[in-house]
Amino acid sequence: MAKNVVVVGTQWGDEGKGKIVDWLTDHAQGVVRFQGGHNAGHTLVVGNNVYKLNLVPSGIVHPGIKCYIGNGVVLDIHHLVSEINELEAGGIEVRSRLRISPGCPLILGYHSALDRAREAAKSLDSRIGTTGKGIGPTYEDKVARRALRVYDLSFPERFAEKLKENLDYHNFVLTRYLGAEAVDFNTVLDLAMANAEQIKPMVVDVSAELNAANKAGQNLLFEGAQGALLDIDHGTYPFVTSSNCVAGQASAGAGVGPGMLHYVLGITKAYCTRVGGGPFPSELDIETADTPGYQMSHKGCEFGTVTGRKRRCGWFDVPALKRSSQINGVSGLCITKLDVLDGLPELKICTGYTLNGKLVDLLPMGSDEVAGCQPVLESMSGWVESTAGATSLDELPAAARAYIARIEALCETRVDIISTGPERNETILRRHPFA
Image 1 (cartoon, helix red, strand yellow):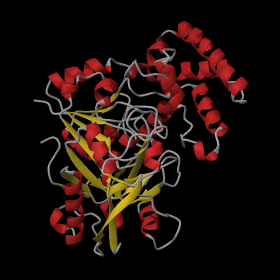
Image 2 (image 1 turned 90 degrees about the horizontal axis):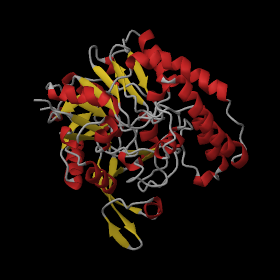
Image 3 (image 1 turned 135 degrees about the horizontal axis):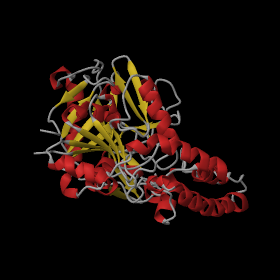
Image 4 (image 1 turned 60 degrees about the horizontal axis):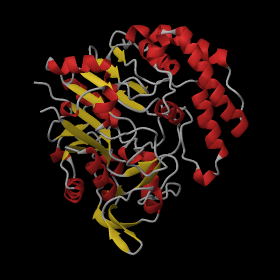
């Protein structure tokens, strides 16, 4: 009987989902991406090779595994073709194993132009911190029912007509409202048609294939992008991404029933990070040497896979994790980057907030309230020993084991996996999600 696992980030993204998806792929026959776009970045370390993926599911580095891009993903096909070519140049065969839903909305040149122009027009303190890759404007077109989708590429004349209509509208906004340059029709059309020929052999009914695979007893692994606290509905709005990042989106974004989602693995760092704007209650100073935040930033290599931007760092945040566990229905946690905390003499955990004179134990909804939260911190002893590369709980220092146990108790969720480094084997397994 098939068992399907959903992997989601429980913080503000960048939790290390890619490594865990890659590690779990040994027990799956298919890996599914179900939301977001090429604003997501997953870095995989396999031996001496480092793979940076944006759209292709992280299971692709395993030979013979089918990888699916579901209808919930907004797709820049030019970027996808480049990513495929780069992987295949490195010896990884992609085209025979990658399946793309015809329902994916297309990111086109005017979407990224709108994204950049809007962000540039805002004051510094009101900028969302988008990647400027056109993700948000494409989701807007999807909801407004004017999006061009992968399906439309099969009908070039109709595609051109729809494209002209869309460009008339978006160029008006770009030039008359945002004061930016217009996007050229022929440039967008020619690039789309050229890339369409590359991806057409990979376009299939993803929903039908996934349901057939499940019926045949094959295990499926659903790979989320970003993190639950960036979810468009449940995150720190408006400082969020443009898609639903929660586990339930695996159903809508891949075309499978919710009954096919059997276990939800929440990925969380042993501390917290955030990229871009928005409130961050447990944030630390990362610029001053010899401080915990500085160590997290530098030892943790906290720079965005997609943008290269420096990530903000802070203590582990229990109320934020509780919110994520609630909206995702988390079955178990995976703690990543435990080794980054090696050598810190004292650790702190944010156990709650004070907000308007009251104690709060759950991350509030909306940025304004979160911005008013002051962290309530609990101190714990750190450890000087190295946890890097540990593969069993017994190898961890007593203080590290106590730290994990305290997180479990405060979050009321079992820690099933602990990642102690970027390599596949640098992992402690306590309970297997596919068991």
